Image 1: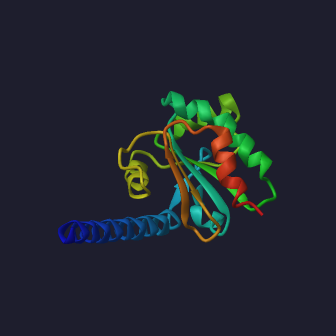
Image 2 (image 1 turned 90 degrees about the horizontal axis):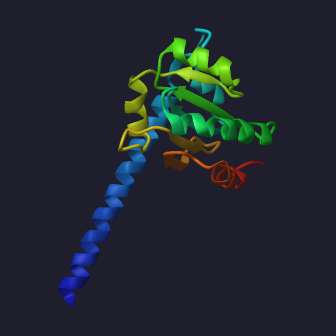
Amino acid sequence: MVIAVAICAGLGGYILRHENRNETNQSKAVQTLFTLNLPDPAGANQALLQWRGKILVVNFWATWCEPCREEIPGLGRVREKYSGKNLEVVGIAVDSVTKVREYAKEVNIAYPLLIGGLESIELARSLGNAAGGLPFTIVLDPQSRIVFSHLGLIQEQDLDQRIATLAY
């Protein structure tokens, strides 16, 4: 019995230290996110810092990723629903400027797009996407804390539920 209690206490301490380390690493990754200046499809550099203090939905995507393409209309509708409620949706493309520009015109994407290139996969990993897959979405609260992350196709209603608790 004493051994079992000791093992549980040790395991609990390990898990707590591991979770704290992950939170610290993600906090540093969020700080890095806000230092970025990435080009938009028109070639103008955009500072992610301009959206600090908002509820920020960051979606890592690519034009060649079918689930990414499927979730774009829902991301636009969520942005529209919460317009005026301190929210922004930003897509960071793991792609080339030319492909993003062409695709954005074709489907009329209704939120800011930035070109992160392949380097943005490492940023996504540091934000909690251990697999490095796409699409990957995070939601930051106005204090720049990650309150939700999702790897894979995000359903509009799931994202809406997460944001509804934050929007004011």
